[in-house]
Length: 138
Image (tube, rainbow, N blue to C red; front, side, top):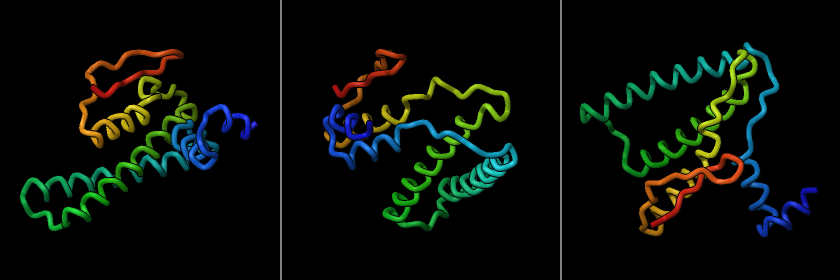
């Protein structure tokens, strides 16, 4: 089945697998206590980020531009993963995951691509088939 999907996608197998991992939903098979631990980790992360924001605003931030860029990318990847995990665990708390953000990773990738080629992302995000959204470079 994987081979057929790779063939139909037109991608190299490694690219297909990587994109499948990035854009798939994370299914949480765990306990409410484990998810609560992740929520506590996010709270601690929020405190650290507030401290960093304070340092930046006061001009007392000592991280170099390159280190800051790497830190920002790592932090963004961490936050993306945590949002996906918590959406996948919503059922443990008798809640529904936020489906409005279902295609946000694809939209972010399109925005980064457009920025890299020096074009603006059109302001319109229109609904595509199966509830997906579509952005275009202009």
